[in-house]
Length: 94
Image 1 (cartoon, one colour):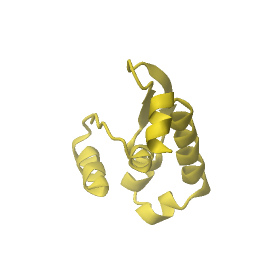
Image 2 (cartoon, helix red, strand yellow; image 1 turned 120 degrees about the horizontal axis):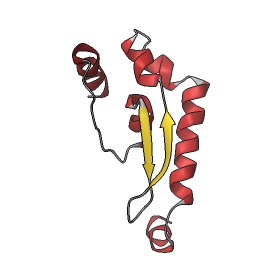
Image 3 (cartoon, helix red, strand yellow; image 1 turned 30 degrees about the vertical axis):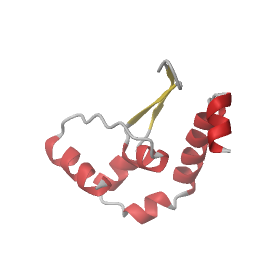
């Protein structure tokens, strides 16, 4: 589905808003990733990304997702998300 969505984006040139809880998907697809606080949802950080564009330009998905830059950005986003967890959520996820 990710590759299909990027294909539609490339062909139409239209902006797409995707809301996902899948960090890897967000990092791969987004040209701009907006991190929100747990609640109320406030913008915590905006990140400019180019992994989806690299795929649209012909780079294989597997090569992008194994790139150290992709892995580092994914891990950074994960760390930002998990540092915002509430005590209740930590108990649920622990």
